[in-house]
Every structure is written in structure tokens, then in C-alpha cells.
Image 1 (tube, helix red, strand yellow):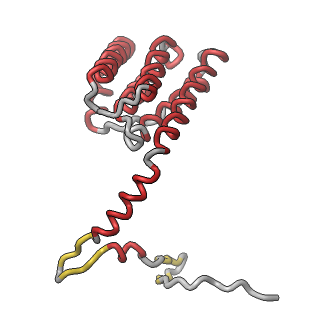
Image 2 (image 1 turned 180 degrees about the horizontal axis):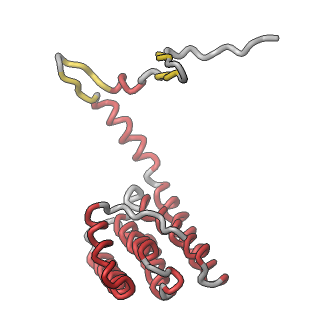
Image 3 (image 1 turned 90 degrees about the vertical axis):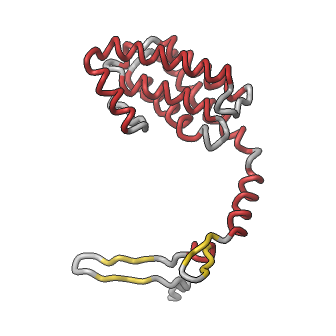
Length: 199
């Protein structure tokens, strides 16, 4: 029986009593040029990366459309199946995906609006009491920003929509959380990332 030949990869191994640490070769060293005691990033590697990014830039719109479609589907399922915790959780996950990827795809305002929806769902003491119309406004705003191709983070109309939604979200949360609202404000200031709600 012929044994499959192993690929020729230079690795280092450190063996311990209960485990072995295997360190693969660092192929990124090719992208660094050494001059004296300092290391400089090879500019040709950056140029190649930027060129590759430029080639796929046209696909960003399609990818963002897919994220918006997933958010729309989650909203439609919520309306069709009722405001249950699993349905709200699906809306949160879809909004969280938009929040995380919108800026990369060139839609920072869409990401901020989706982040507002994540904050609402994540911090509401009872997600079942969130007005569906408030979820609708967020989803509609995200879709409008992407549909209209708003790429500027300081777009006047988009920023105003985001600000108004943020005020409504903060008002809702402050009313529902009472004295606990100060804690989530402090937490948001220290850790701006929104964690998934425990549904």
C-alpha cells in the first residue's frame, strides 16, 4: 500500500509531557524587507493587496445586498410568525452581520443603523416588548442607505436618520431599564461592541 507523500513544509515542534506545539512556517516574512535593524513592509505587497481589493470592489454591492436581504427575511419571519424570542434573535443576528460588515463593504452608516438595532435588542429587558415598528424603521433605514448607495459616513440625510433612531432607542431603553440604564451607557462607552442577547 502506497503511503501518501507529506507536503514539504518546514515546521518547528516543541514537545511537552502532555502535548506538542507545532509552529508552521511564517510565509508573511516575504512581505517584510529588512534594512539594518529596522523592518519595513514591502510596498509591492501592499500594492498587490490593493489591486486585488480593487478587482473585487464591484462585488461589495452584491454582498451588501445579500446582508440586507437576510435582515429583511428575518424581519419578515418575525412578522409572519409572531414576536417570539427565536424570531427576535434571528433579527439580531442578521443586524449584527450588517453591523460587522457594512463598513468593510463601504456602507458605514448602514453599519451604525444596524448597530442601533443590535443595541436595542441586546439591552431591552424584555425583547418581546420592543415595538415592531421600531425594528421596521431600522431595517428600512439600512435598506435605504444601501439602495441609495450612501457610502459617506457623514451623509446628511443618513446621519440624521441614524441620530433620530438612536434617540428613540435610548429613550426606550432608559424608560424600560430605569436605574439600570446608566450601567449600559457606561458599558457602551467602555466596550462599544454589542454582545448577543441571551434569548
